[in-house]
Length: 602
Image (cartoon, rainbow, N blue to C red; front, top):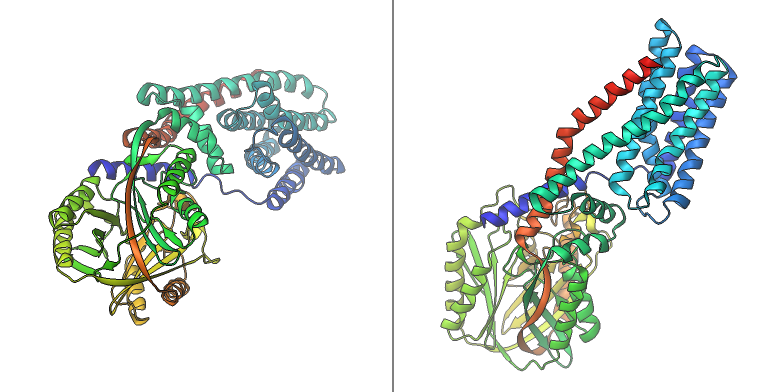
């Protein structure tokens, strides 16, 4: 569990950086801001030195150059590079113009006291700073040919300096002789500075983790900015290892398939649409398309040590699950649901034929990932009490600021043992099952809900009605589970439980400490509980006498990104950014001094 906590910390650190990097203004906002910066800001500053209509022409020409060159870059030079859309090019240009404007304003201010040539030199210094920034942005993120990158970097700034030079030469023809050498030499210096920075980052990855830092960084950017999963998954596939993945299915059939609880021993991560992050909703969708009824995919007893390397591996598990699930459910009896609390730990179990469905919760304390060892202990315990099979589930339904799951392992084991022992002595009887799924349009990934929505499976044994509620999200805020259970009790459901799938499709969807919202953090609770109640009542309305069936099978040779390798990747992301912060000031500080020396020579 200490390793798991360390891995979660490294993933949170990586997600924290990336989830805050790509919130850009809209196309319209960026366009207006660039126009205002070029036309209004440049004109107002320049008018202080040279009040004439030519300053207006200068501002308009700078905006036209920026817009036209950004369009050429996004539509032609880098059209195969999805990061560089016209919106992002304008946003980059806006940042560049804000930086450049600082140098222009400083130059004008000093020129009022020391002569207008100081404005020229500081504007050239701003040009060098902008070119360096563009070298950094394009070299770190673009996979296009080098000549395309260099042309994309220099085209806008170079033409802007030409516009400035035309304005300056109208005042003094001598200025042109000073501008040209600096325009040629400064990009070379900027390229060298950026190369040293990126080389230091790439060297960190290759030397410390044997990982290609820059290709990984570009792949991360492509995923975060454009949602492309293939480039990053290609790296994860190469770094991954093959593993045999176990899957358990507990399904319920009546006149036709009613419902299924599918528990693959796969962690639905690591983030966004990478690897197995989407597995719960994909599995649900494909299973329901094949068999009908409602399926849910709660979290098994495991952590990030079994994240899949790619969505191709998802498809392998889903295909095998659908193929294997074509069996008849024949067990006609079930026990009531039993719940035992031991200290902080709560175990809930219900027996279907010779199979026990058992879930763990530590709510109102944090219920995070649980070690695989716990699942094996429960399976052995079930066999000791005469049961053949066990489906063990982590409810994953409470997240607080304190994660101390490891301290409650003994309580979890004891609660499971007592719960099974209590359930096996109860008389089993015929049962009825109903199911339903709701897809709340008001809740999306940014709210903390994945594409699987809310699934309700209702089981009635004699006079007891139990609602199993599975929400496609990553954990829940404290107290929400208890509120939901209270609401379900008010609707006539006796002993229910609420699960989340732990889908990491919601991760990196918002800025903030975690990069995602647990279920209920930003959702309207009343609306959420109404949807849950509606799903449960709809499932209740479709109750039918049912049979249960259990299946356990193994999907061989599935590519996973193991815990240690995943930790290396996510730690590298964090350390690369930290490394950049350490070296950026010495490198670019030296570059700036060199630029100043060059300007003093001209």
